[in-house]
Amino acid sequence: MIRALAEALRREGFEVVTPLEAGTHGADDVTHLQWASEHGFILLTFDKQTMVPLADEWVSQGLEHGGVIVCEQMPRDAVSVIVRRLKNVAQVHTNETLRNMTLHLGAVWDKPAKEGDKDG
View 1 (cartoon, rainbow, N blue to C red):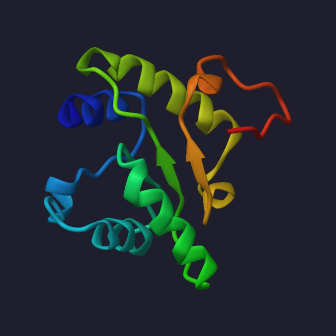
View 2: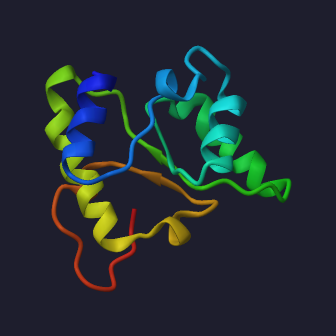
């Protein structure tokens, strides 16, 4: 699913680097968050159990990250749902507004956001 999602996001104009491409495949969460932060990326994760507490811990310790978007584990055929939700997020947020933020990519993002709406 990761390859299909990366390809679909690239077709929509998103800049995407997978863990395999970054050389962090199989690494721990700290390595993934650190790599994304050092390279100016927002981290998309399916691992809310460990990545969310780690991102929160970083912020509480004064460390900065580029932002974390948490997507619940979805079936393989949900790539289009994830892409649609990320496109809607991109209408509201920039890399700067997502800095040090954890955003959950839930059903609230199924519809295009209205101007001034920053929920998530």
